[in-house]
Image 1 (cartoon, rainbow, N blue to C red):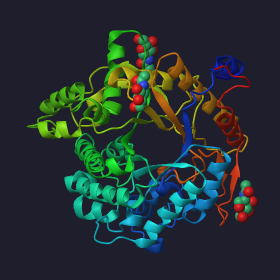
Image 2: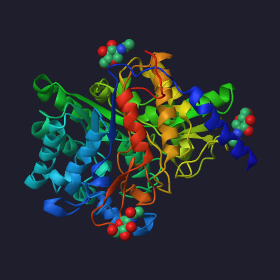
Image 3: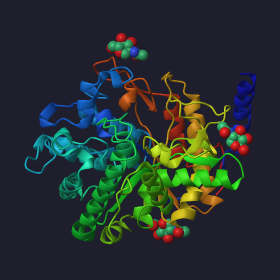
Image 4: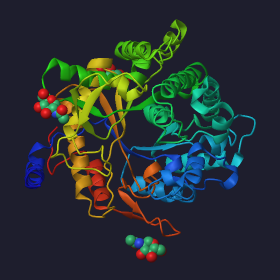
Length: 493
Ligand SMILES: *[C@@H]1O[C@H](CO)[C@@H](O)[C@H](O)[C@H]1NC(C)=O
Ligand SMILES: *[C@@H]1O[C@H](CO)[C@@H](O)[C@H](O)[C@H]1NC(C)=O
Ligand SMILES: *[C@@H]1O[C@H](CO)[C@@H](O)[C@H](O)[C@H]1NC(C)=O
């Protein structure tokens, strides 16, 4: 305990001296993010269809910490103008939001287009345009229309990839004049490894080491199809850009030993590389192919649990990016360990490393979450070294807490130090980082965390029918950063 207190004091004392005092590059863009199922509410209003998250929360409330659902959330469906005004007041370049598939296509299919849903986003984009804020739009933020889960098995069926591509085409047609930054899929690792592997997230399918890889393949194909549709049919007239957002922790080797370094690289390849390699380099990462094949054989499977891409598919997927989009929150240490015994197959067993956290790292709301600002810089350098000088857009980064306190100095510390490491990466390491999007502008419904995990620079009173928004201390701090383009009192070019 004493060690912990000392290290926190050290962090506070040393923090300002460590903060990068260069200005942000003149073309660097800053924004905030959120997602339809977490803020919109109006879950069944004006013709919106049910999503897997509506269904999951209503059917298994015991799987949500506080038993709540996304029914009303932050009520942004009715309060979007207020949200846009907050973004405007902070002086931000980008507002990242997502379109709810089932608000536009209630069944998931293109047979019924729900006009009030279409109008909602038309009005939202008009409001952003009137305020000179650029939208960054996610087409899939985990909210699969429930009929596609029930009728097709969701992301375990390749047909879902085609249906997603149809939905993407419709969105380009409807909104492509206003939207120039598109994101196909948000965090495929959470969609697949948690939605169809461990089953802790919706739709809650438990198929660890099998369904999750089938999902990964279909989600990557869905992204590639949506990318090609944009490329073939819209890019020439609309001139926008498309990418998939991949989330990963940074994994720091527990020592300089070759074994620990290899273990850290391996989990990075199973985490970011599983989704990034097919897009940025081509095919699954070799270490993933080799390890899943090796363990599948030992487990008695006739073929690898990792479904292969054909040569045509590898070619079709490779290069489907206009930038590299990254969600990042925290870091784990990684040690080599003994190979997990052959038995029940699983994604974790396929990786077989030991993850741990330094005891003196300040904690976030979840057990896996600590504040480790230098991890982001190491990750950015790894991305540059692994995939080349692709433009990088950080699409999420932020701090969760369980207190929701208004004087959120810990969040200020987080943003200041993570952004400082972004500047170090740009100026010291030559990383091609163009954009930083913070999560989040306002408190939301945090999936299985319900209303017990807070990440907003504005608090939302979830017991108030008005869902009143109130700025936290971090909102003022972040507004100053955007205005001054600088993290400290005085900056240099
Ligand atoms: C990780 O490895 C390092 C170096 O061998 C060792 O000092 C440390 O105790 C290990 N930590 C864990 C949690 O295994
Ligand atoms: C950074 O990315 C932009 C946009 O893709 C590109 O034009 C530029 O050449 C890149 N810069 C470097 C140093 O690679
Ligand atoms: C939240 O709203 C409720 C209902 O209007 C009100 O009683 C309560 O004081 C509010 N909480 C805060 C922290 O403002």
